[in-house]
Amino acid sequence: MKRRILLKTAATTLLGAAGGMMYCSVEPYWLAIRQRKLLLGKIHPGGLRILHVSDLHIGNRQTFEFVEQSLMKGLRLNPDLVCMTGDFINRHVFNAKGYRALFRRVASAAPVFACLGNHDGGTWAKRIGGLADPSEVADLLSESGVEVLRNSHRALRMGGRPFVLVGLDDLKSGTMQTEEAFRNLPPAEVMPRLVMAHNPDTKNQIANQSWDIMLSGHTHGGQVSIPGLGTPVLPVRDRRYIHGHYRWNDRLLHISSGVGTSCGVRFNCPPEICMLTIEGGC
Image (tube, rainbow, N blue to C red; front, top):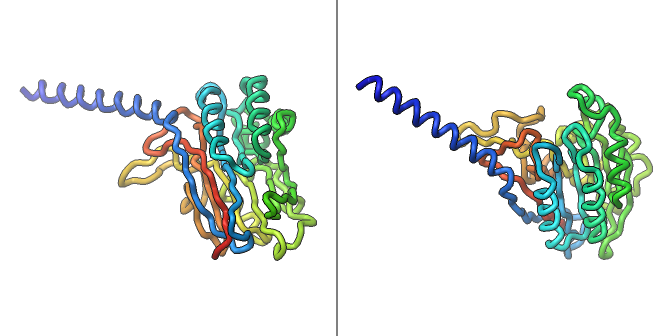
């Protein structure tokens, strides 16, 4: 009798584990489309619509087709511009020809700007067998019509709304240069400053600079969120900021859970694309 109970318990446990693993491998393809409003006094009412996309991670654990479908769904929301905040690859460039064709389609529908992530090359990527130089990914994107901001900025005007977009290399890449990125910007009182930085911990590195909103990814929303336990694995030091939007030192943070994954698993934390409407307000 006791042996039968033990066998039944073991079988139930194995079935539960198998079901859980199957679910974890399916959820990475359940795309959530988020629409969020961010209030910023320096931009007059009427709204600036930004499609925030992050962490595509195209590679052997993320299908090109799912990334393509996700971006096309985002474009159907009619953004004024697209901001992509890094980790386009998993260690190495995958399907470069398909990538170029896809990003040309995106760039033909709306202006696209990007910063790079830790998987896209640099000190951290080299340590795990990836690209030592982020230039390969940056060049691929540029050839596809995506403007990559590497420690640089662009003054933009869309729908009569002027603003500055700043892009930083990744915090772990060894190539981030904050002073260079913020040099010779138009006065902050005149034009709001939006920053793209892959890792949300970058906020501390640029705390002494003047900026209004920072768009990031990197966390994957925790990727695995366990009820009652939260997100046990987070690749950031400041674990208060995981996904969604936050107030930090009178500034705004928006952190995307990302489209892809680095390991092909998600639980209670679906992939997402985010349509941000930035409006005047306090």
